Image 1 (spheres, one colour):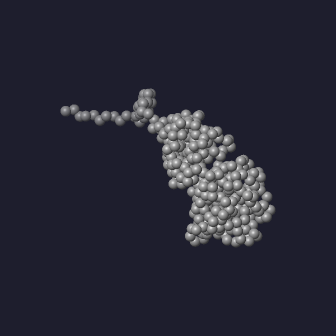
Image 2 (cartoon, helix red, strand yellow; image 1 turned 90 degrees about the vertical axis):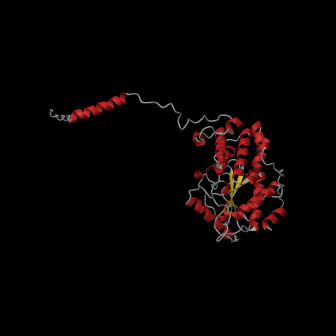
Image 3 (cartoon, one colour; image 1 turned 60 degrees about the vertical axis):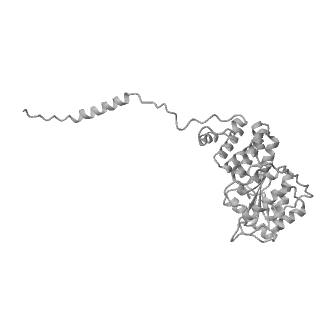
Length: 358
């Protein structure tokens, strides 16, 4: 039996060359192209028209993919489609914000655009558990809707009680001018024009305050202005009106300038009213005085008549973002005011009785 001769080792260079050659062969083989559909389908074209088909059709793709595509456009069809998809995803506040851009944006909406926006807002408020907030929107949508499918959807919602027109205001409300609280000069380069107001938002100052002396109230308002301009970078105090515990109404930012009180686009054509005090429950909180509630109601009624908007355009700050402002003790007063305005309960006696409470 012959002895087995051991195999001679391959030189190192040849081994490396062989491996490189193998890699080259692999690279030369055409890669397999999967014919399976992509997990992320391309987004649909942006809607160009406003109809029930383009706005109210359930998504066939992942709604987040379509929302990403819609975020590139600020057109009314894209914003309305966004509002519908946000409702589909159970994000009612995002739907309200998108619809508000159509209603209160730089361009006045057409009746058809406003009808869809109002309907979507009403649906969003229902999702939030605040259907009373959307009643005016729904009434307005009923008046404007021309699309048969939209009319059908509106008709399927809860019937609405008729809204009475507000009673006439006997006289203009007295307002303490900026000079009376020693307002600093505004930074006009940091202000934007207001445009025609179409809504109002109620806030509280979030600081316990019961002093009714005019000098003390003026000092409190000046303190707010300094905070807004010095620490927040605003061009002026953020609110258009402030109401002290004695029921005096003070002029804040001039109405020709857009406010800084409701965050971003929510400030557009939005009158900001701040009621001085901290209306949270518990320690450090307080209820608004009857005089404050009466003054707020009179001021809001006058602004509604002057600028021709309805009870559905009266908001609390908490309608726009996750905040406790204006506090639950004030939110209940605002809700009662909205109910009374819808029912026509706006005469002086009813206002005073509502402010006094049970």
